[in-house]
Length: 360
Image (cartoon, rainbow, N blue to C red):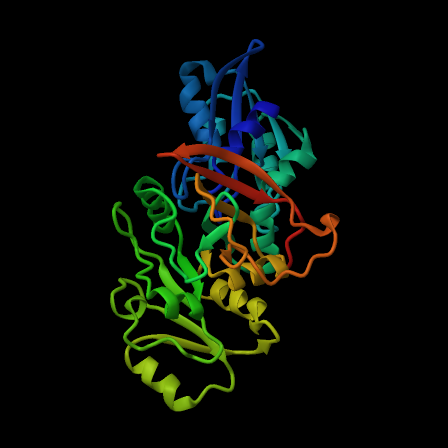
């Protein structure tokens, strides 16, 4: 099961809003197949592991971090595949937290004569699916925070110059991540400062829907993100914005949602609940620093993707990656676990998972 857990972590950042799952097939004390859920919409961990085992799967034991799915979704039910493969015993880390599915596979496997044990390394397996549980229980998308910075944590010089901190290779990887998301979220400050496109370029894949937090509706109607994007943009503004300005945006096909305002801007809890109801499962938050700070402050970040360039600005007035959190003690930091660390043409690419309890 420890091996299955390590395998499951490889899927972090690629499968959300689905859970990270790993599986290992063992026969006569030897591992004969292993796999993990590699990408959203792709085969699940059990299927990959059993395929890897081939003919050795018949009569073998299956270790899987999460109860196999028992209903038709993007893929067929894994519980049926396990039975058809001739697996003899199944060891499960934790039960599916979705009340509509939880426990169904256990009953199905037992009814088909398999020996089933549940709760092996349960707490570690539950940790794996924390983003999935947060999304499920809080009715919000899984949130990945992304930024690129110098080694001293700066995302731009004091004049606002940020092109380019990282290499062309790293920037292409960012576009791959965008293609895996339903939406890409920024604040109006980023739009006003950089007029970004926010779509997918340099790689194949569909562009995510642009989502803008703009309390006062300052976004220019001719901004690239509103005029050069393939998917319909959404702007969340305050509930006291001039109705005539809202109407002008809507006439261009922009979805404008008026929402409550807190001292930090639009109410993020309202925004995330609304996005969930619109069918968004995975959101990439790209900034700016104040927006990232608000998401961390509210406890809404599940995953992080950070690109560190081998550069140092050393300027106290340069712009930091995250701001807005008021922290007096190190005990109050947001703690993460690094899941992937790799080089991207000289830059460090880091995937991490937030360990502190996410908020609804």
